[in-house]
Length: 529
Image (tube, rainbow, N blue to C red):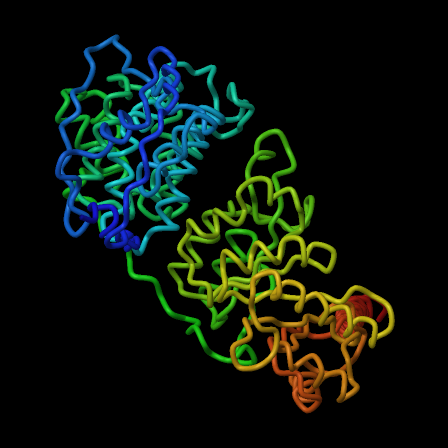
């Protein structure tokens, strides 16, 4: 008889062969006794799999968590699971719950919340999965909440400082990832999530960094934040923690009143040919983003790097370089989420490889931007190393391949080799109608002009052009026409050439000087007379 997990996850159920003589019984060695306080595998599975099991076609049933009395702490996970060497990892939700607990033991609350988020997104198409995972991970979830409560009580446990696991932004990262889970959870999963957080939250009139980070995530348009904050406010009220609830209600509504997330726009439609794109070359600051938002741009390009000072060194920011742009730089999450809401294509130009060690790709996935509206630009040196992982996580995204230098034929050959290597690692075709999206990005004036080289590249992807440092005097319109005649079929992102800008600036300066001299003469002539 298949179990509910076999049915839910479509596992094959083996059927014993007919008329098979059972083998003789053999004496089995006695299993080692479990460590004190640690359940056996069967006990763990039993604790996470109720008699009837949660109904994955609807909402699973959860037992109400009692909030601890004031001043009391709730139990942590202790050691929920044995080391993997002692028994085989169970499959399905039980095994995933073990992974969440292991993440907590190895990296604390932020890493455990990351595991919950990653698993939820990987199984987002499985009905009821988020609720089942939350229930199976309820002890770890409470331990996460307790740690958040400790950080809320103790102002010395600041997000700008590393926690005991060596991680920055512990409260922010934990709440960010729990927001992702909240966005996918059903009513019962949300209730369990709210009860756990409420149990760990002190009933104070000041909540230190808890309310600050919830507000930040709201400002960053984080998916699921309205549900996460809403279920926390609701359960705080139900548990009698009126001071904490009143403080959070200044920024957030109860779950029943929480606003629905706005449907994403569709300024760029997935499947539209890339030659139709109108790119906003820089949208790193709030002002630049708003200019592009109010214009006709269908793609927004942003430069991605780690912060460069004590205040933001642990955050991923939108920034070309140190002191490059004037204005308020957006955080990476706000840029992603606002771009998703507009429905534009997002070109991610990574300027600092350290972002890959700070959940860059995971944050992109958490934002929910569709693959077809993402373009990743890493530079030639990082393209293969990070391109393989990126293609695996976002199979429908566009990889921007940059030239490595050398003769044009050498560049063409090496770029094609990169594409082939990335696709082969992911068991994908590199040419033909089923090839994944790729564009070869050249600087204007340093692009191929040989028809054979252009056609060779177009077998593997489109060809895109950006302005660069060209000193051509042609207008954008004329330059674009010439590029299209060559067969350039990707995104063309040109501005008026540097030479045109210099010429116009000099002309303007000359006219200003002439006007000024004329004014002086007109004032002096009457005095001379």
